[in-house]
Length: 157
Length: 421
Image 1 (cartoon, rainbow over the protein chains, first blue to last red):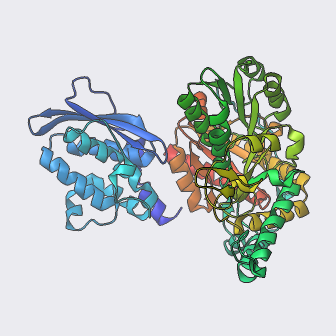
Image 2 (cartoon, rainbow over the protein chains, first blue to last red):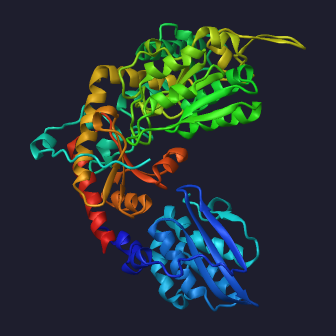
Image 3 (cartoon, one colour):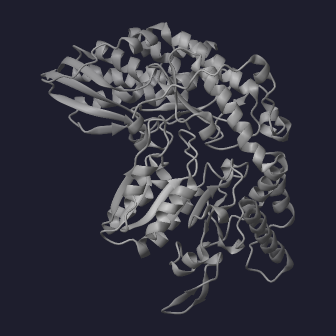
C-alpha cells in the first residue's frame, strides 16, 4: 500500500471507524443539524447541548465512510466542553488541515492531526468535513440540513 | 428483499489464465499508456479505441463545417458525413427506418425527450406510469416528475430477492389505465438482463408506450431494436466505445411524427411564420440547433469496431469475466455479491464487503490501479430495496481479461485485512 494511503487510513482513523465515540442520539439536545454528501449519499446528524456559550454535550449518528465517521467521532471528543468561539476556531483549523493549508495551528490540533492525510486525496475532503459543517450549523442555530455541495471551497477541482 | 450470496463456483487458475481480452489492449491508447491500470468501470463509461479518436480527428481535419446549412461543398460533405454516421449506427442497432434514429447527448436526454414531448401530450390525470425498482434515475425521475405534473399515478414494479423483476406482480400493475411502461434493458447497478419481450407484451396488451433504457443493453447485447418490439429505445454512445455526448433515441415513426418537438430552434423547422411555425421532417424535427457532428461520427467508428469483434462475443466475454469475479469474490470472507446468477446478467458485479464503506474500499482499490465505482449507482430506489446505502461495482468490457479479475480479488482481500485491523 502506498505511503499516502497509509497516512489516510492511520490506525487511529480505523479505530474511530470501528468504535465511534459519542455515536448516539441526544434526547435533551438544544440544537442539531444534518449533514449530507450528495456525491456518495453519506448522511449524519450532529446533536449539541449548549450550556450558555459552552458545548456541554455533543453526539452524532449516521451513515458514512471511515473518514467521515472517524472525523465525526474525533470531533465530538475535542469539541465537548469548548466554547462556541473555540469550536468555530477548531472548524477553521480542521478545514485548513484537511485542505492542506494548515500552518502553525496544526500543533494545537492534537489527535485531529490524524486527519492530515486527507489533504492528499481531494475527493475525500468532503468526507472529513461533513460532520464539522453539521456541527457549525447546529452551533449557530442554522439547524436543518447542510450539504457538502453548498459548503464551497473544498471541491476536488 | 434479501441479499443473495452467490454459490461458490471454484474457478481454476488454468481457466482464469486462459481468459484473454476480446479486444487488444493496444487498440486503446489510454490503456496502452497505463499498463498497470485495471479499468473496471465500463458501465459508467468505456475507454475509446484509436479508430474512434482517429475518426473524430479526421472529421475535423478534412470535413468540418456546419451541416444542413451552406451551399458550398464542404458543408455538403459535413452533411453527408453526419448522415452516413446515422446510417451505420442504425444498421448496427438493427433499425431499418434510419430517420427514426434521433441523435441526442445520450440516454438521459433521450428519456427526457420521450417523457417531455410524448408524455406531456399523451399522459393525463388518472393515467398510470409503471417503472421498475431496477431503474437508473434517468428512467425513473423523468416519469415520476411527469406523473406529478399531470396528476398521473406513478407505480414501481418490485423485484425478486435475486434482483430480477417479479413479472407476475408487474403484469398486475399494468392496467388498462397504464400509458407508459418504462424499464431498463440491463440493470446498471446489478447487471440483471431483463426479459424485454415479456414486458413489451404487458404494455401492448393495454396499449401503453413501452420505453426501454438501453444504456447497458446496446453496448453488450447483439440486439436488433426493430425486433425488440419496444416503442422507444434510448442509448448512450460513450458506454459502447464512442465519444462522450454521443447517443440517441429510436422511436416508432408514427409516434415521432405525431408528438410535438422537444426543443425549438434552427434545423428543426420547415417554415417559420410570424404567428405559426411548421416542423421539419424526421430526424431533424428532434435535433434543434447545430448538431454535435463529431459524436455520431466517432460512434459509427465504435460500432464498426464492435462489429469486427463479433457482436455475439461481447456478452459471452464479459459474462465469463463476471462469473469469474463473482466466484473469486465469494471466496473472500465478508463479501456479499448482489444480483442474479451470472447467466442472467451482463458484465456487472456489485458487492459489499462486511461493514467497509464502498467509498473506502474503492479508495484502497485505486491504490492498486483497480478502478471501480462506489456509491448508489444513480439507483437510490434500488439501494433502499436492497437495504444498502451503497455498493462497490466492477464492470467488465471487451478490453478486460483475467488479470483484471485477479487484481480485483487480491485488492479487495487486502482491503478486508486492513479494515479488519
